[in-house]
Each structure stands twice: as C-alpha cells, then as structure tokens.
Amino acid sequence: MTRLLIMGPPGSGKGTQAELVAEYFGVPAISTGNIFRANVSEGTPLGIEAKRYMDAGDYVPDEVTNNMVRDRLSQPDAAGGFLLDGYPRTTAQVDFLDSVLSEQNASLEHAIELVVHEDEIVSRLLKRAADEGRTDDSEEVIRNRLRVYNEQTAPLTALYAERGVLVRVDGTGPIEEVAVRVEKAITADGR
Ligand code: ADP
Image (cartoon, rainbow, N blue to C red; front, side, top):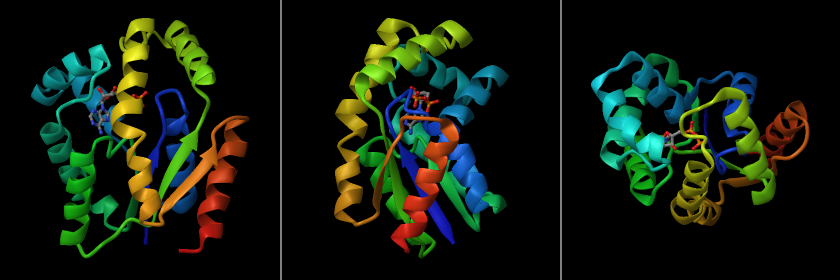
C-alpha cells in the first residue's frame, strides 16, 4: 500500500512530479488545486466559493478543503493508496488527514518535500504566468502565495520529519531526473 503526499512551494513542480511519481507507484495523484480549478470552471458552488481565495493567492478555508479531500479519499480508486498533491497545507489539515487515516487504520508512508531555491521559483512562476495566463499568477499574487506557503506550509515539513517519514528531494534539473530522484529516495527509504 502506497500512501504518499508531496509538498513544495508554488512553482516547485510538485504537480508535474505528482503525476509522474503516482503513475510509477500505480496510485492516483490527488491534487486539491486541480479539483478546485475543475470546480471553478464548472461553476459549482464549491468552485464559486474557492475562486475568490485562489485569485488572491490565499488558501481556501480548511473546512471546505478538508471535506472535499475526505470525499475524494473515499472514492474506490484511492482504496489501494494515493499521492496527495497540495494537501495538507495547514496544521488543521494535517490533523484532519491524521484522523481520516486513523479511521481507516491507515498511515502515511512518505511525505516528499521538493526543494527549490526561491529565486528559481519566482522566475519559473513569472514565466508560467506569461505562458499560461493563470489568474493566480500575477506578480503580486505570486508573492502572496509564496508568503502564505512559507508561513503556513513550510513549517509542516518539520512535523513529518519528526515522524520519520519526510523525504527531501532536490527539485531542480530536468523533469524526468527529478522524478527518478523522488522514486529512488522513496524506494531506498524501504518503508
Ligand atoms: P500552487 O502549489 O502553485 O499554489 P495549486 O494548484 O496546488 O498551486 O493550488 C492553487 C490554489 O488552490 C492555492 O493557491 C489555494 O488557493 C488553493 N488550494 C489548493 N490546495 C489547497 C489546500 N490544501 N488548502 C487550501 N487551499 C488550497
């Protein structure tokens, strides 16, 4: 059973790596950002609520996010494991995930942290803003997203390190090389 999560600042490539690593381990990649974006484009009530936070680069409230993740984890394809991408991002989300997993007598095997220097992050995000025009990719919003990440999410890696499940991986270099680095780090950890 492979239960994983991946953390990293916006622009660290965590969504791309989540897809590759999830495929390698044969589990679904569950991206809260993608689920929110799908709801925004379908104009669902969840999407309407989430959009104002996303457009400002703020986190969607924990209660909304937690309920959405609980629903998603109860889908049959997640029964054999999963890779969470972009969740948890707050201590309340860590606690909630712990309780969902303990209800299932399950536990997390690894928390992957993709490490990329902040200067590299900012240049990647500005390039993506120019290429794709994501509404949450203006320079001001990018700065806010990085600040929120550094304040609320980066400290969570220490929690997973204390539990002995944190795997830190250099997120720079070609996409395929980073993916192999992650896969090897997890396999070598032997849990
Ligand atoms: P990034 O990692 O670049 O911030 P994502 O696609 O993962 O991009 O997320 C986009 C936005 O979706 C976030 O800025 C936030 O508003 C919202 N979001 C995603 N995951 C969460 C979460 N776990 N908790 C709260 N908000 C979230």
